[in-house]
Image (cartoon, rainbow, N blue to C red):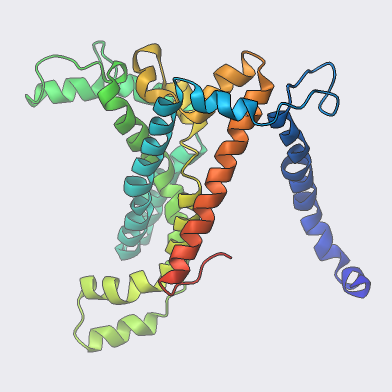
Length: 301
């Protein structure tokens, strides 16, 4: 092993920054999980703070906000998974059918540019599009075609909040997600398409029998990760888009941790809720991976 490390020392130097990053930001903070089981005192420190067992987990489960927080978190995540997960696949398939290379590059560039814009800016853009005041593009258009008679207060109505979150999330990430599938599509042997043409297959049959099976492994892996990430409804997005009028639909686990744990300096309950979310996410990841293997596909473990 020492000989292998020395012979490939320059290659190991390339991965050293990544290893250090994981040690500092992923493994070292796990020491702080003790706070979830202690009545943490910032002066006494982690080790000298008294043990309280599962007290803060029980406090979270008994909180009258618990049911609403869980429903909002799971509902938003499931909507993003059901509607948002297939969106990059569909875009990649459409881009793959475009033969004009210049037009294809323009569409691809425009579609993934929002990914590099922060959620603060994206939220501002959507507020301007859906504004209740005069000049809101969406309200103006809907009134001009007769679908509504007066402006709608989109961001002030709880019934619309989840859909605004899902659509804006798709708009921001669809182009970047499509890049992965386009890379997978480029690995499909062109001779398969040529053979299918000889057999009389049209484009739809080629997509169904060649293209989709060719990227199936990529879809499955990304689906497993997405399923394991259900408890993460998107803190950045929700935090900048929520307002007092929609808090009944906008309060999720991460924003609860921010307001209850961080703003009120209750670090123990913040850690307990974060640990609870991580355990659920790990369980969903393992369950989805086992389910995929049950159907004869390759999982990630």
